Image 1 (tube, protein in one colour):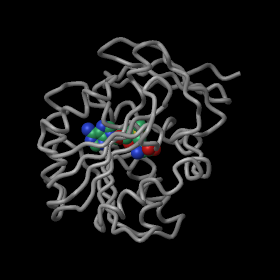
Image 2 (cartoon, protein in one colour; image 1 turned 180 degrees about the vertical axis):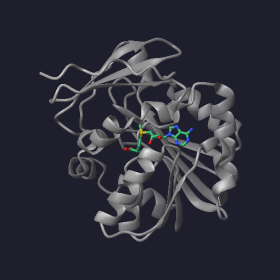
Image 3 (cartoon, helix red, strand yellow; image 1 turned 120 degrees about the vertical axis):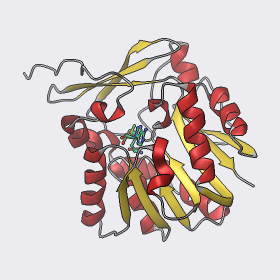
Length: 256
Ligand code: SAM
């Protein structure tokens, strides 16, 4: 049996250091694209069409699942991510799926330096925003996203249900976003400032990801503070949900 890899020495705030090659190599196994598609159905496509979005920026492309899915649905997609490993994987997956769109490595904190014009929609999915540990960073990045949107634009940003996790109620159904059946995801540590997830793979590989456990109401109010006009919240893709029960919370913030 392979000895599990030790906890990465990289500080939690170094998101790039957390997405080491062996974890990136396993990311698609963690997602299970077919099961993710079956659980999401057309949730994001319908939201984006409802917002009359055409030009869409995926700021946390990861291995490219949403960028590729949205491109297949006819959106004009730009895929961005701060991790060189992830962005390389997006490129390869896009090619494998016969899709071609702009792919760029960009840290959210300097996002607009990399952009060519504004977007009708920005998606930041898969519980990515919690990689920002400092409230000042979260505010600055949400303001950056707001600025990168056209008037009438929409930001869709999600996170794991840290309200429940902080009450020690983590029991992911495995039905949403990270649907792969091989890996076991557990919470190795939780307090108000840090959540450390542990990923155990069937081949003995072990990885950790450290994030800031943002609360749903905390993000909604930050979105309003940073200039968005309205925020609608969904739990596991349902508008009517119980915050004690859902795995993921999705915020849809609109700019007038
Ligand atoms: N959206 C993908 C998915 O659902 O599979 C990936 C989600 S993964 C949990 C988080 C992603 O956010 C990683 O690809 C990471 O590189 C990216 N990320 C984290 N912090 C970032 C930052 N400051 N700037 C740009 N990308 C960042």
